[in-house]
Length: 366
Image (cartoon, rainbow, N blue to C red; front, side, top):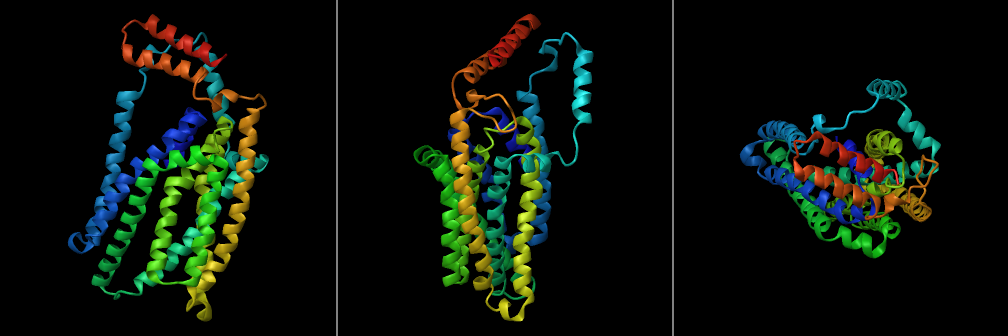
């Protein structure tokens, strides 16, 4: 669902609007995480079983919110202008569906070098965070007893961890992301997080204590949500619709899970060795540091490639340049004004609605 949301957002917004709004989107997304983490700090009072039930029940609220969006924001089908040949439209839709294959996403990733780089920059950091997170939890769990009381105390510790991560993420998303990306530019912004990963792995290697891991992992995870991931979403602006939906879905789901599996494999290898297990932060951080350095190099390459695509007005996956995607005004602003007229008028006259939609089509075809 999250991958589909960002795919829809990337397909509906231009670069300048993304710089100003993506941080705000992420900021409000952290409010629920802060609330959930706060509940976890009360595990001794509520008990873990109740928290599981409450978390599962919250999914119903998401369904209600989606339904509310459909009711208040979707344009009624009866005011859409009739197509001159509905049969032809239906045949085209059937043809598109028949050409959709399971491996379309990975095919697009392998076909375009820019998208292959997006796969690397969007997944490699998961390896490092998985290693650091595991190290923190192993050391943290060892501080408490193995009975129910110890489990509740550990849950409270993780609740405080979640509060720290999401509060920092909320503040930075709300006040910092837009400033940083406008001040430094996207290509430089992409280098900030990999550099901090390198620093974080070195710090935890030198001082592998619980609170060092707690603070370092919390800061890195907070910047993942508030700085790195919004910046990564902006990299999809100069790509075609199939890449935004098919390739991105594959990267966010299969690619990200594979990266976490790779991080877990590192943890498992260290844990299986009696010699390495006693020094988990040191030995686990060595491959994490190597991956961080690779990520920094990939980020520099992707940032440079992104800037050249924006400058040339080229869309990866398409032949014809579409430089209007990188402007906040122009064609998109005209279409936005026309849609606003339609939404605010609530006219009962179908002819008025059809004339507005015709104007939108002419505006977009310029």
